[in-house]
Image 1 (cartoon, helix red, strand yellow):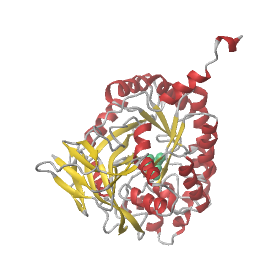
Image 2: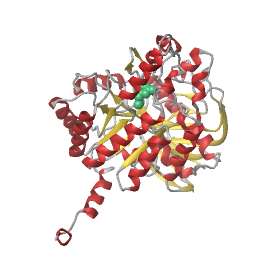
Image 3: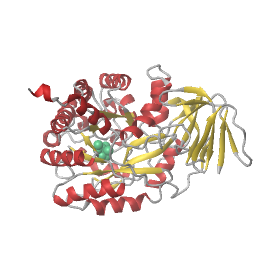
Image 4: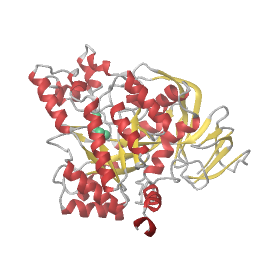
Amino acid sequence: MTLLIRGGTVVTHDETYRADVLCVDGQIAAVGPDLEVPAGAEIIDAAGQYVMPGGIDPHTHMQLPFMGTVASEDFYTGTAAGLAGGTTTIIDFVIPSPGQSLMEAFETWRGWADKAAADYAFHVAITWWDDSVREDMGTLVREHGVNSFKHFMAYKNAIMATDDILVESFTRCLELGAVPTVHAENGELVYHLQQKLLAQGITGPEAHPLSRPPQVEGEAASRAIRIAGTLGAPIYVVHVSCKDSLDEITYARQQGQAVYGECLAGHLVIDESVYRNKDWDTAAGYVMSPPFRSKAHQDALWKGLQSGNLQTTATDHCCFCAEQKAMGKDDFTKIPNGTAGIEDRMAVLWDEGVNSGRLSLQEFVALTSTNAAKIFNLYPRKGAVRVGADADLVVWDPKGTRTISAKTHHQNIDFNIFEGKTVTGIPRHTISQGKWVWRDGELHAERGAGRYLERPAYPGVYDVLKRRAEVNTPTAVDRD
Ligand code: DUC
Ligand code: ZN
Ligand code: ZN
């Protein structure tokens, strides 16, 4: 199949220039001015628009079994909604139950993901520890292209990884050349605060942020970063929501530590007042962890993106409908944690980031695609506009507008955390594996078209560690 994107402005993480882009059989075959139109080619007119790498959402949870229910968005509906929003790759999470074999869980998630409409990869969570977990991590890295492992420092009595597990697993990641990642919240403190609030009779969604204040996140981020630093491992902190954890990342990076941080579109623009909405269903619709924070924290996150201390944006896309959220009607700790966003991430980041002058075009591309590809070893197959890369592209109309609503979105959920927000700057066309899957408001997602992406260990972020180790290794003279 041949597709020519004509007359647009190509934007990558480091360049902006006028060029046509030719896609042949799923890959980018040529990039340059005034390319000839091959016989039989489909043509997209991109005049006045930007041609960018398709988005990579490095943090999603499609059809996740969680808190007594299952996320309503499956791998087909979720990746299709992503395509409508310009996102062409996701990295989802295999989350074994404590005691469950990692390989068994991995095969289960692989089966579920068969119906994906866009390419996908997996992080695998470490929720317990013994020798078989250690072995399976090796098998996943060496034979299945998994190069990142997730650790939930919260969710006590469920999937929480305690310090002993972090030490074992980070050590193993270092041996294997994989990247440890953490959900940084102190699970003991969250549990303590939840029980205290319930005992005081505070049972509604307004208690959710009170049980997970910024200190709880800052403490866990500090602990995880210092454990990784002591072991010499890199570390990636998912959904950084507040200044407290950002400060820990920034400080460690200033010391030369290989620390990376991700931030969610929602945390950049939604504040904690949503939990005080008088309508229970609306307030519960925003329940996710870590919770939305005050405007001061949002400002800090924008500065984190601008300064390079945060490198990626994601969504933690994890959908629960009103009926599911109602499981926590009498007890906020039972409200399934999760919100949607895969369809809106790029438009929200463009509208609030690029239009406001907070981010340049190149920074937008880096933050929505290229940096995630580099950190998780998908680059330059993904995250690039260059010959030989996968033809995963978004044609972005900077003047197009859309009012976000659950009534019109493609996500399989009856709620949208950005409801009513009008964005300027929208994906006009999305190309996935060289196919024109989003055509000016029409979705042509194909069930099962998505491919599993192998992500080899090393070099990725380990290149940074290797170079620093070389520079910092004392010479014989130093030792004298
Ligand atoms: N946070 C959520 O809100 N949902 C899924 C898992 C998580 O860490
Ligand atoms: Zn999380
Ligand atoms: Zn998550």
